[in-house]
Length: 461
Image (tube, rainbow, N blue to C red; front, side, top):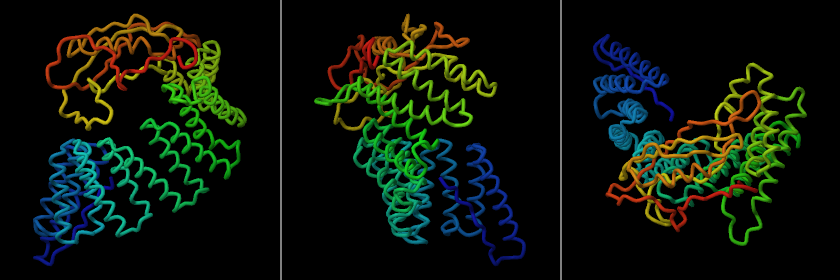
């Protein structure tokens, strides 16, 4: 969020008095900005409070000059997690600006956005969307419907509506951002690619896989039209398209759908191989980019149960990164420990909420956790999974252990070869109902919350 600064004005008082106050305020403001930049939020609160006090003394507690210091103080409190104080000070700044500058003042947009973010973080999603909607109205009145300054407001509205589980309205605001960018830049402008990729990431985040793929395909189309089909700028869109195919292959097939792992995984492989060809056509090929794609291909082939092909791609990546001492850290990121590729998802809330149920407020639930020790063999399979700690006991241990056992990993590599790994720890944290639950082992649910079990071999394993 943009941090507003205090512009000190000199009052026509006794000589020297206003100058001293202005100097003190300027010094405190500079200290506040430096502390915020350094992430020292608690200290920034003290500096912001000093600026506020000096401004109130100089201009009066109800003057419009007090609004900016109030916003600065609220912003520091928000970053420090003092949500109640931040909300109070944002509201005070809003009231002051309404009184002194009018209900449609553009200066209201910043504290309204800050208030919205504060309310999202405190899970007051309805109030958050009200604050953001008002900020959007203020923005449109002052800047027009298609200005680019509205993007953070629409991002906030997205989070507010997502918190209310209203995906339709959350989608609307992300799509409106892309449409606004298109209006400003033109649909064939290379700068529009970033907006399309952002939209694709939103769809990825909310498991709208086919919509994500369409956004990435549009981004690739813009790049191809402007730069050609062999442009290195195509690599990121191609990798994103490949990932949508891979993710879709992990989902249960839709009724009457012709899409299956047998058709989706080859499509993912085709996108990755096209990206790899672009990299290898460069003089010289970028070893880090090449290894990045080879590792993704290895993961894909391991899912596809093509273990020899997967191992060959991993070894190519290992060799490419080992040849350059500057890339050893990246190599270790890929291969020093087993990396999860696929498997069932664990519930963040237990019992999982029913479809179409009212949104669950996590602040009303109690924390729980399960800790499992396990190993991963050279094939990427889990071995010897066992619970070593759980709270509450006898609630989710069976689910977590079974899920760990069904998870597929990229194995650890030493000297370019896969090796067994033991003593790995999985800690799964979740929220559960505060009421006492009878001691029992959790059983798979019959509803949509049941974790997806992947086959142990064949496509999609």
